[in-house]
Image 1: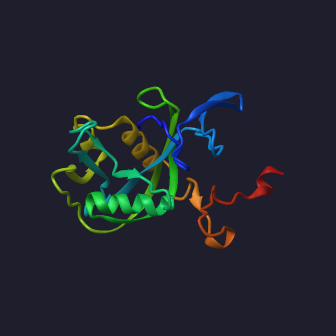
Image 2: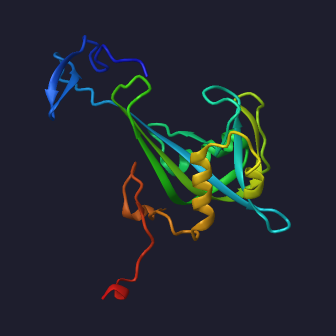
Length: 206
């Protein structure tokens, strides 16, 4: 991401100030403080059984850099006004044409520090999704290929992203709904989405 030199609120040149024990870019005119660049990515593990009962997972092959030619889970960035469960289902459909719904969150990766060493952080959420309908389609450009592959078939795929393999392994070896699941809407408010572990019988600990 480009370095910020002007205030996004009033367009005045940014200076620096100490805040929270760190020197940060700040606006001397309107008191805006730049705390860093933040993004949230999401990926979907969509599992589907073949007619013979073999379990497969949906993968895409990247057509563009970075990492052109590599294979990974379908996914992308969440929009600033988009719930994560909506974002991951949207990305899966956009990249592969497959319709799927979120079951639970199985894992996430947190990284800090941008490519240029700047103040940035990214969280990459890996969701388990239930297959609903559709066969993989792809544009042959941004997405070079897409398909459902068994774990044995994945072993023969060159350039399979380690993070995607890890997410698929977790989804396969854990029980459905054992991850962190979206709570019902009546427990939250507009613009919020709560995630929690399944209810636990507290009596077993007494």
